Amino acid sequence: MSINSENSLLSNKIVYDITKFTHLDYPDKLACIVWFCGCNMRCAYCYNDDIVYANKGNFSLEDVLEFLKSRQGLLDGVVLSGGEATNYNLTSFVKKVKELGFAIKLDTNGTNFNNLFKLCSLGFIDYVALDYKAPEYKFKALTLSNRFGEFSKSLNYLLESSIAFEVRTTVHADLLDEQDINEIIVDLAKRGYKRDYFIQEFLTTKSNIGNIKAPEKSINKVHLLNDRLNIVFR
Ligand code: SF4
Image (tube, rainbow, N blue to C red; front, side, top):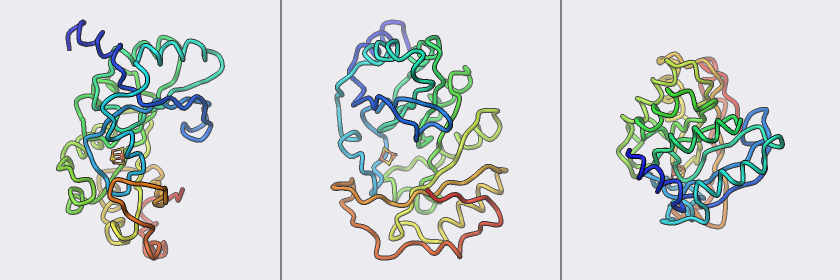
């Protein structure tokens, strides 16, 4: 990316919104959340549909940096979320955030490997929350994207790196059943993932991308392979 295009990215309004304070979204840190416009996937249960479909946001990265300057000493960290933050080359922005002294957490679907790799290998990311959307055989049906291979590369990279990270799955019982979740668990264990595996239940909101309703039943936790990984329900 040239200096000019990096500068224009800094002034473009690619940020949908900023949550000014959270103590729930970054483990052990007081943080803000930066919500990036757009996503390369279309998960049926996604309730951030307004963010995913937004072509333009309300803030530029320069605005975010100004906001962060006003929060130095008050917040510990910044969560990059969306939408999908790695749709953008954020190297120059993230470097500036680090220079301001903030820890950075990246929430990602892992399907832009090159951008994720760039940010992580430069040492700019302190924590990654990686979505494992579905086993490979269901990935396209659930996300309307064909990017399991990219996701898989990101997962392998994080496993080989020393970056702190977690893997998580959002579960709607009509889209993923116990067998699908067990496929994910077996795959994670086979790859050497030893940390907690987080399962988040589908949240009913006023809208979502697939216009889906709450499932009629929940998944049966008893049937999950919790002897392979420590499963944490959120
Ligand atoms: S849930 Fe899916 S569609 Fe929504 S922001 Fe995350 S990856 Fe994109």
